[in-house]
Amino acid sequence: MTSGPGPGRSRMDPDSRPPRDTAPATGSSRPEHTDLAPGEEPSTPGALFLSVILLMIVAGFWVIIYLRLLHR
Image 1 (tube, rainbow, N blue to C red):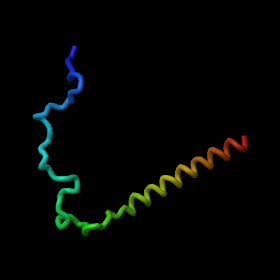
Image 2: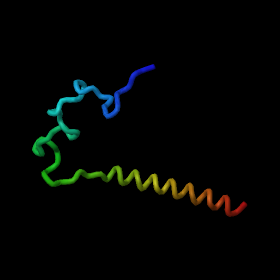
Image 3: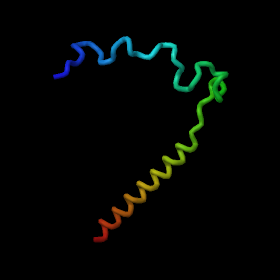
Image 4: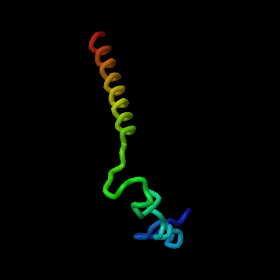
């Protein structure tokens, strides 16, 4: 039988936590070190395009199944 953390304790040992001075996910905490100007939002036209394509595929599949079930 393995012993887990006690009540109210985390599984992560306090000594194994990452240091607080690690870089954020963008790679830098300073705006001048990123490709975006301060206040500028990241552009995601590729994600929107792929989402619309996926939505069209799902809608087309639904219509095909609906028509096949309607005419049997």
